[in-house]
Image (cartoon, rainbow, N blue to C red):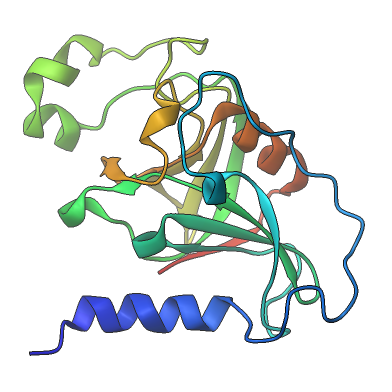
Length: 197
């Protein structure tokens, strides 16, 4: 029996990545965050990497292939910076189209009612929220995703658990290493289109 979710994930990955040889069209001058980060134990491919993508992807857009734990920020025609991300647990994976409707440095955090209901022991004590800072689960930066002017409650954000990158562990948000989300945050404009596959 064919797994429909696997087919969707494979199609999404094929849509983003290009079959052309790396840098066949000339490598652009793009500065990436330094690697490695002391104490961080994620696979090398999850560090920011310049990759080639299909020409149809517009510069200034974000594409996330959840099944592969990669976020692509299209920087120039045919080129993207690929970042490793953590995504939602199986039943909580967000898929769809949105825009970056808000950007915040060291954001505050408040669990959603659904999160509290799913795991009151972990989240009920934070029902009134937590101020931004190094211990806040949203990390150093957050980009808030909106659809048709409505906050989706999904964020692209930093994390206090950087070794979770490359896994499906969140409540639906897209987590990044703090150094990496700062880099992305500095590149992204309000209104940036985001597609999550």
